[in-house]
Length: 249
Image 1 (cartoon, one colour):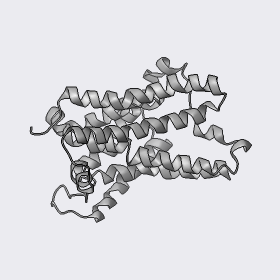
Image 2: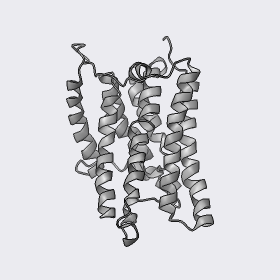
Image 3: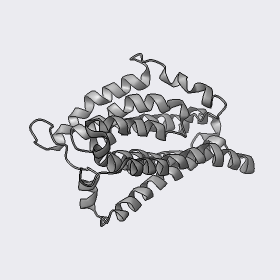
């Protein structure tokens, strides 16, 4: 199939996006915590932002290496940041973004526990049980009351997590180029790679790979628009803003 990535290139891009995240979380963060006596969670948060920004830079480097001129039109076409297309009628329009609603509901069920799923992550738990667990809610202390800079840091995280980082590299760069290797199951294996990418959050690797590939990658493939995944994935960012505001206030 023309202009599709080889399996080797797909795995190389995965490694270039995933391995730095694991190093930042479990090598760089602990070392800086010892050297600076800063809150390890804050170091981790800043380090992960560095990793997300790197994914944006990596995306640009890949596009340049492919011979593209970086412009708005390229973003729309190559990365599928465009109007969704109805899979049956072929009609396009932003009104099709309403189809994100059922996938958002599925996402809510998966993340809130309203819908019981097998504890698939328990299979890996012995491998990461000794690793530090970072939880944003631990910032809910008097030390961060009135710290509005936390909101700025979180908005930066959202920008590079849900738009210019994870979604750009996985649904923008990779997903349109995986059909040559994986055929009609490209969205499924995109989810697998996305789950395995979460080396910085090993406790969610398996569930992310199995469940959120469907929630994020499938609608993007079905409607030929990366905006589907950006909106569905970005929902957790809105919930995070509520949490951060609670910490500040």
